[in-house]
Image (tube, rainbow, N blue to C red; front, side):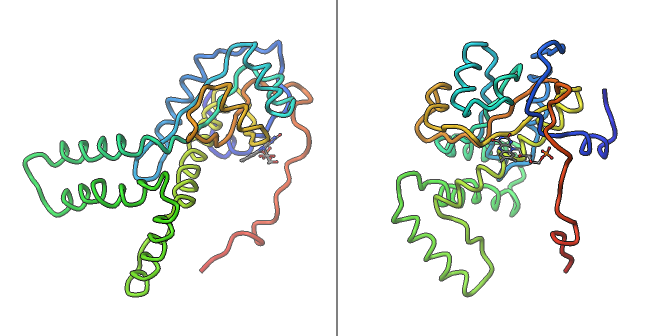
Length: 239
Ligand SMILES: Cc1cc2nc3c(=O)[nH]c(=O)nc-3n(C[C@H](O)[C@H](O)[C@H](O)COP(=O)(O)O)c2cc1C
């Protein structure tokens, strides 16, 4: 059921109630997630996980954790998009290895820069899990260096958190469009008790849930209102 991208964007709505009689193939979620994995993400670190909640009993438990929202109660499947700050080292090494392979036998400035990026800069930014004070130091250092030349300022633990959530949100969007393209509806949600949700999904302490996405086929009354957006002239600025 492929449609033009315009149609796809116009037809996707956050659906709060799903049709319990409609057909739902869980394999389609798996296929949509494969597409989501191709989303752009910061430094190709792919610090995300996608937790599929299919089991009926688990879905019911998650519905309570999501404040009893209909979009969870009536969904055929839920996907929790999770950011995983712990695996930066493995991912940096993986990317460095990819660079090494790509440039095998022809070491040049580009490959040296890429290796330096994954070997030095990425650890500088990401190795901040428990270093609150050092994070502040890094921020001061970047402000100092930044007086002389342009540089990326977002290097604190909080900044990394934002960075991970940006990438996870892009993957979420790809997933939701892919689901729409396959004839399904979705609802992204942040209205949940993160402590309980993490426990239910068996996540690590450091993991954070970016959003939980309800999936199904819209019931007749599944869309709660007309779509409303502020005018583009209020928010689109040209320079
Ligand atoms: C990060 C995020 C969190 C959201 N959380 C919820 C939620 O907890 N419950 C809900 O019903 N909708 C939630 N929504 C859906 C928005 O309310 C919805 O996208 C918005 O009203 C625009 O409607 P549309 O998606 O139909 O265009 C969320 C959307 C985003 C992007």
